[in-house]
Image (tube, rainbow, N blue to C red):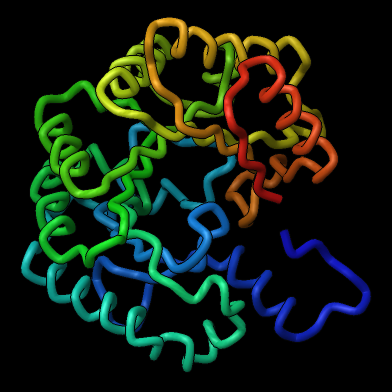
Length: 292
């Protein structure tokens, strides 16, 4: 999407820059920020409930510097509700596209797609997650989705499950991360103490309860692409989920769009993303969305 051309217009270049600029700050807001999302296909209102940068993973492709993580704090739900209402009005009125940052948004993408619970860490690690989901559901305008972007590690917790039920009742969707087909590669990429099997178990259980979207980021590590054996194993994990009765609505294959903190990690070329996407489609029969 928006591949580089010699005759790019300023509007094309501006749109491309929006896809890679996902800063989680906006005006004086504490939690809420807008982004133009390639995968959502329009404006996504982000809800950052990890302003402390706390996460149970330290993924090698992440742009967040975990060495600056702060002390865990509670979410001010009243402030969150006010910021959400103001942002929804800003987007749905079209006034956001008068701002310099968003003025090059292509007309087909000038729409509110979702409210995405995400942030500078793992959102389900926040002890206020269930209450945050309830606030988002309360202010959500008709037609907009509620999206949880998660590393899936904590979906088994009771308070998280209750939050997921709130999403289920309010046009919700889980975008669950699976970045590896084998445990060694998972350890290399996630640098987490969470067992790989827990990730797989949570994906299966979540997809038995509702259709989910799988998000996968492939990259170059020290200039090396993921091996064919790793890619085959990844397809096998997807097939394991569906064979157990799990429902996968879509697999999103993408690569690095923003500069990670680790300098030895870099994006896969578009040709390789296309090749991997085709392989996943052929091996699993699942619909695949590739993001370049």
